[in-house]
Length: 369
Image 1 (cartoon, helix red, strand yellow):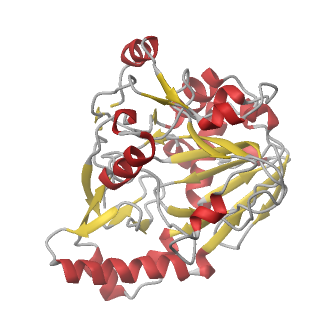
Image 2 (cartoon, rainbow, N blue to C red; image 1 turned 90 degrees about the vertical axis):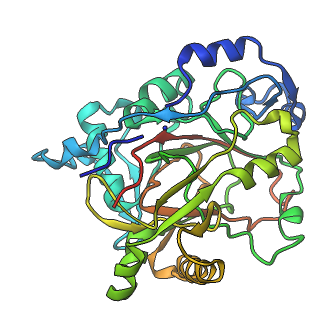
């Protein structure tokens, strides 16, 4: 049985009050994009006045539960063209589904399907990409959980619930990425420092080059099951501290301390978590936000976490790539049973195109085993 879920977002009135006094710090993205750019209103900006209170607990019931008793739990795929990316993990729906037209039963089926497959890429979803932002947030995201406002990232002024992806068409992303490291692989699950991290997450791109910049997804259920039984049993006794302080410090360095919207937090979660609908166990650690194993000495904690990070990054037989070259694509993943990494495998200026997208991030239950 799931622990009653747990930290709530600012109320609509609190957000509205903050937006009313919104003061822009400045945005290189907005300044660089021409006025003719169709999606310019969704470029990242940083405010010195937009501040939010700490998150509070809320109860989350995953909609996928309803699909468990559905006599046809995949009827939303009737007539769809489906291709599995790997046999056990990742699926691509190339045609036959319009995400904007799914009813509540079909969305519940979708939640179960994504939980089972880990990551699902939907093609031909321009209706979704061009939908009203109010629909993205209040209709789509809210169906799957409480919409999350990122504490440090840039946002569109009127839609702080959108977490943005942005690379300028003439930027220096690749040059900067490799200055101090050999690889840009940064395995993580999103926002694990929150008391209630995300569940079914959506990412879509407004503009993208034809190739490159795939997202690498990792099946953390199989990663857990691949470990020896005795090691799994030990890991199930452990808890890990996750921290957002380092991310906040990086953002403050880049954009100023006054750009932080909500003060950073630390939370402790089980190292192995159970999915509330499928019952599957998964590793719940990542080098992005996991910091230490509670109750172990630093060297012991580092050794175990280092082994698990290495396992996640090198386990190519439980990984799948989502490709972004086709406009109108929407990728959904279950953040509770996957990890992922962006891949910087391009040279800036080689394609002359920006990379710009948005993530919809519903919070789910507090992790439990």
